[in-house]
Amino acid sequence: MRLFFKYLLICLFFCFFSAFSFGQKFSTSIDAQLAIPQNDYRITSPDAGFGLRANFLYRPVKDIPLKFGVEFGMLEKGRATQYFSGNLYGYYDEFKVSATNNIFSLMLLTRFQSAKSSWVKPFI
Image (tube, rainbow, N blue to C red; front, top):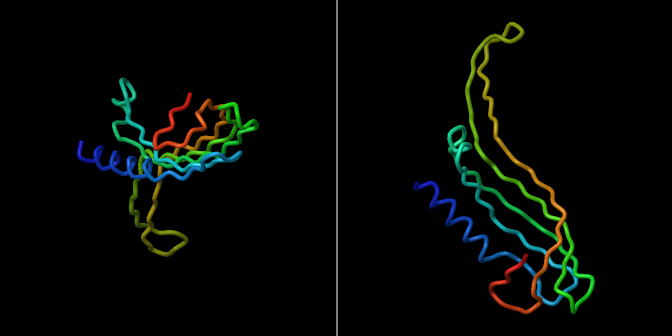
């Protein structure tokens, strides 16, 4: 549970400092994401995942709150390192093997969002 709060604080930090522009035809943002396993998936993989997302949006008409764009994301679900030792081509050596479980995403977006400047900008 302590790890959950650590990831939550990191997520909130990035959410409050996301970069976006007001009143422009183009806007970008970088956000944190947190994946918490639910239901049956929690039995097989109980670890929470964390990562970053970035999007690039274009508003074709200034008066209509409609934006089109693309969003990229990377989420790390787990990490492991293991050491091995053995003979390879007649030489004895130690080996380090590292692996991560990552999820990469690419999405095309259509977003309805108000053009008014404010700290909170809800969207559909």
